Length: 131
Image 1: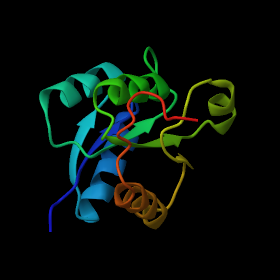
Image 2: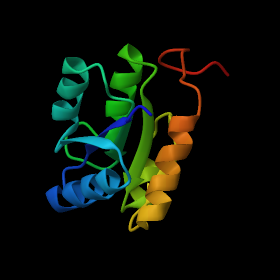
Image 3: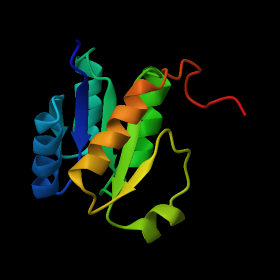
Image 4: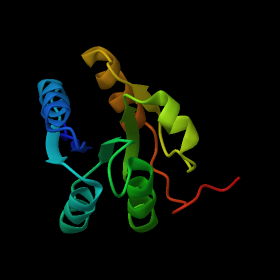
């Protein structure tokens, strides 16, 4: 069975490492980035990323902007969002390419969301889905 590669993006280093460790225990290959800019550079440099698990609220480029940038060039990469600030997420406009998990979430909830998104077909339609 092929191992899926997940890129975890979070500006909070403790949460980044905790999330990455949780996903590794679930059997995923995990890459990490502490900003959207670093994450996009990784996506550009690698061809094995299946899913991005990104914090929504980050300084500079946020998780929604990162997802837009990635989906423009790599529509097959799936996205799951994480946030500790649900009230901030509501105020941030932008298309959501996948589910948003509220922190703190249990490891089984995280694993279930990731596996569910990975089991769906890729979005080959590009930047914005057809309405």
